[in-house]
Length: 87
Image 1 (cartoon, rainbow, N blue to C red):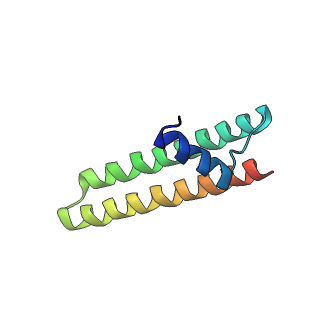
Image 2 (image 1 turned 90 degrees about the vertical axis):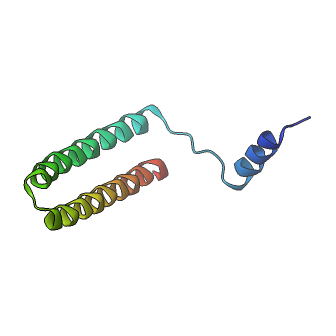
């Protein structure tokens, strides 16, 4: 007898099958992750330095900018990874 979890997973698999990636795709996905982690770290270091020097009003704007840039870079990264998986 299947558990509720197993039933849910089999239904999910039927709706959207798992995409298999080959070794070349894995390498390319890892390179994309490394590149975007470096870009995110670069922006974080730069803006956190600016945040530490800023007054409270500027600090809030810089924190929002940091969050926005991280979200944009993560979205960009996921888009590139989807292209690799789809190829």
